[in-house]
Length: 260
Image (cartoon, rainbow, N blue to C red; front, side, top):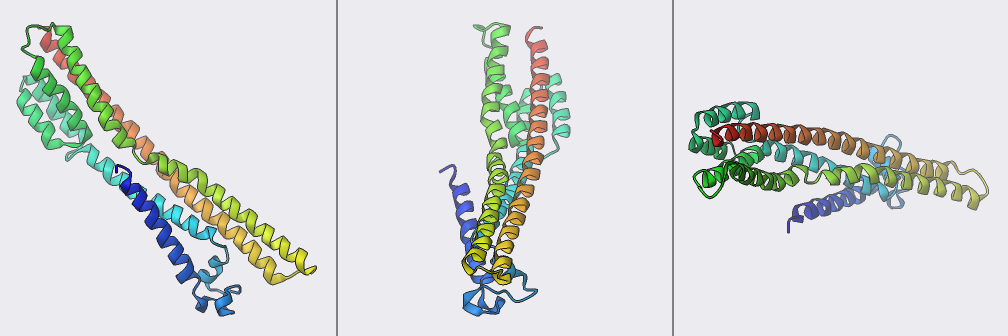
């Protein structure tokens, strides 16, 4: 059920793309020969692109999927950052820790929410549980806090990286789908020449159009996905680095407190 959203997005993208390809691009009004749909009206973009073949619909679907996950990752990473800017939150959080006001710090983390707030809250709550446990020495207490932080980190990090693999996959396969369409279009063009024994400008242009539109569609989908993947990967890496700095700073403050 975790991947239900992904399945729905992919299914809807394919459905919408093939419906758009067949009913809008393939509208007989876009062609000189009507229902045959072989000769697009000069200057009619939809009819002309339609001649690229069914793989055009697949490439449109890949582009829609990529754009959808760009928005999904944008909202998810923004939510993971919390309600306030991380820098502002961490500055106030560290002040509360240095003052020993742990309850206020936990409340602040809850208000901040997001991945950063959740991880710091998990570590601080564990510290509150072991703080007065006389059966544990200072090192064991700090180890318990670090374990809580690591567990929370292991839960939050996959959420930050979720669906990036989809963008990476689309970046790879869209160029291959475009290349497949290009190859099919060229095969069709040369088959037309071989069957007629003469140069048919119409059949040759249809084959070349199929090749070029698929190439363009594959490159467009790949560019969107590659740029988005690199952008979000950098965002996630920077955010994880911020979390690491915050947990390290918290552990240093707690270490000083425990060993006093």
